[in-house]
Image (cartoon, rainbow, N blue to C red; front, side):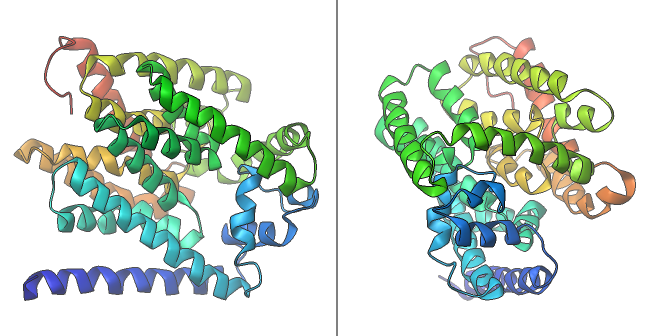
Length: 353
């Protein structure tokens, strides 16, 4: 590696460390999202994981958090965030293999994409979700159904990540991968039953999710980036929003068979975000595969569109002021453009993005 590349790599490392420090200082005493996960580490194995910690992820995931529950809130945040940064850079490495881009390019785009900053500073786990998404794309493109099934199965740690990826398996009839996912879900169920000390945990879990969702959309609705979420925030009923989300996701997914495997797998997470009734700024990290695919053909138009997305992303910080998250623009814009192009083009045509 020459001196120039070493300097770039060192800059990435320093920037990542600064984000971890900034996030830790913010989280300390501020009660941001990391508090939810830290509390979960202390209630895992008891019904209070749902009733007090109000853990909205698959309950079995809390066992992994238990490993760092013995540390202070700030110290555990450092450990957790360092792990998330590692996940993010592993995802960029996989992206370099999938999209045949230099790893410095995929890593530079990762660091520059503002949702990474949001996720790390809030103590969110979207970088882990990005790693599983890229692992699923990698396996799908290489027709490795065993790895694909494992990646999709693990992604059910957060159902809003796992369900769209499972749609990919259904649309493309990946039977072996689907069976692996089914086995993984049984394991998730057992781990979750132990985590909440209740074999019938889905009932209290769904009740908790319902009340938490109503609270969350009232408090953080300004940060919605999906069409149903935005419409619910401005007055659409939640039931209508969820129906719209399901219909939109299924309708868009039907277009995936009209394109290449790499484009289909890449677009699905973006489609899921654009049609989500509950997706916020940090979730936009899952848009990176689309941006990576976009620059595989470095035409002036594509580069200009990608640069525009990167410029818009930091405007997230004004969401509370303008009551709208600017990250919704690239999420919805890219998805809408892809859908329109796919409807217009011949099913055997070139890539739409």
